[in-house]
Image (cartoon, rainbow, N blue to C red; front, side):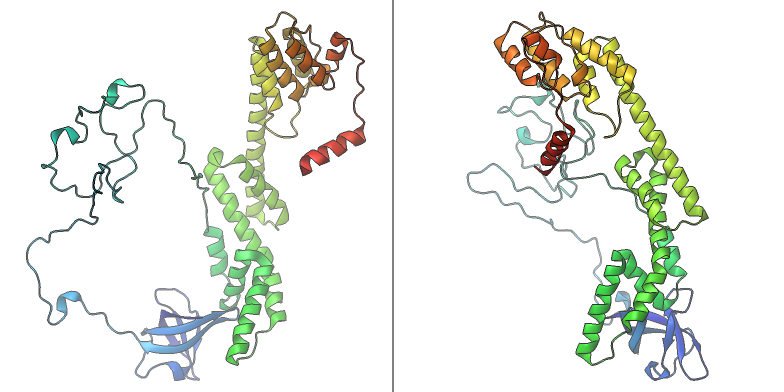
Length: 425
């Protein structure tokens, strides 16, 4: 598909052909045949070119002189209107019969403030003005969470958090410095191939070749050399992947702690799939150290939360914290696991209220110390005893308190089969 751009003639060779570059660019872009250049053109002339971009480079189809733009002030027959023009309202508001609601205006922001010209409101009743009390509505300044006046853009009522609007996600920082530098260092015929590699790798290059050959066949032109273009793509692939990874790594390094941990882990893992140069190796090492620091800090904070909860007697909070480790493979240290299991068993006594006892039992069943917890007793409540019977397979010490035979641990094969079925379901 052809498009038009402005080009500048840079030099003329002995065979009559011209070299050209995009208007405003620094380096020549290609060569154009002298038959396409209009007469009386010299070096530095700017022409309007109709071009077609393919994997083999940019082909100029035709050239035409750029028509000088005519200033509106010098246009013949133009009448100048003196004075300040009056702007009509952008949106008209129509009230439905019998309805007191107004159509929401596009120039009204989310907090209810008009950004455009409000016009004359003097014909409004005094009780309906913004901020003024209305006799048919209570004053919201006396209600919990109410506001005594109009809200300013960006302001929050007490208790409101700085959470993003539903449907919005934090925008990850991006960088294109290394990709632009990589493209600038390539030859003109390599740039389209590199751009396709950035879009989707080798599959995108093959798809572009097929599309270009189909268009060439339909117009009666010869098809491009598929083998030569794929060989060029294989040669450029390591360079393109390195530039793309460097941009992602640079953005992660610039964001620091604001960069999401999951995305940082992805960038660090991707560094093992590219051929790094000296700058890339230093960047990968820095990101790996940053990832290790953040993971270590999260693990220490998790262990401290469990330890403090046990020390302060908040056993339920301690067991619930052990269920949610910062990393899927993070394990609780042996000494802390023994301490947590002992504290949970001592808290599950016969004198504990049944509701609290069953809440703690539910947390213990999901915790990593469930098989080592030894409850001190079971409340004299039928619902609690029924819950203990159901949980005896996960907490073997409950079977002894209930007078049941202690169930053996499930075989490894059944455990693996259960996990696979749970993952598939």
